[in-house]
Image 1 (cartoon, rainbow, N blue to C red):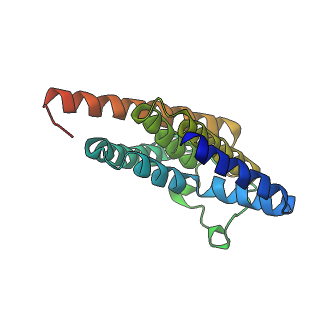
Image 2 (cartoon, rainbow, N blue to C red; image 1 turned 135 degrees about the vertical axis):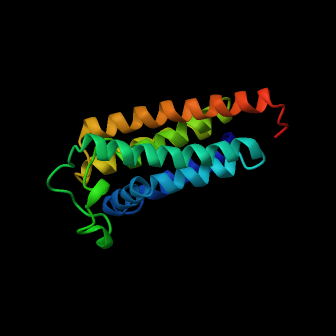
Image 3 (cartoon, rainbow, N blue to C red; image 1 turned 135 degrees about the horizontal axis):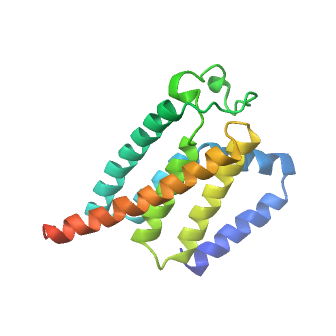
Length: 182
């Protein structure tokens, strides 16, 4: 990210101070709700030239989503009873695996991305910190909107983070074992 980009981020945050607090909070809600997609975009952008890493990232992401669906159906722990819809299209959509909240899919997917990114670019602390901020905002948004309990969010974050690390290590080992150059 570099200090130039951090300066731009700082100026943006200062600019946000000149708009109403309600608009700022709505902006953060949006980051939290779309955190999964923001993180996918961020990871892909930052590891674009690393073809092998991208392939393993997407394979792992799909497996991560499938693990979440299976766990929700096995554990069957309901979400909080009074969820607030962020988008109008969310109302009445809590059926099947979506009805269950353990573990949080948003949290699990965001922290999978954070872990994978942390392993791919460990020395680029600016992007890693930004990723963790997005992760924390996502957890906060899911809690504020009563979509998950704290435990569901923490379990999702831990599961996603550990799985991201495992996928990265497996990918590195497979590429070494079979002398895959990418």
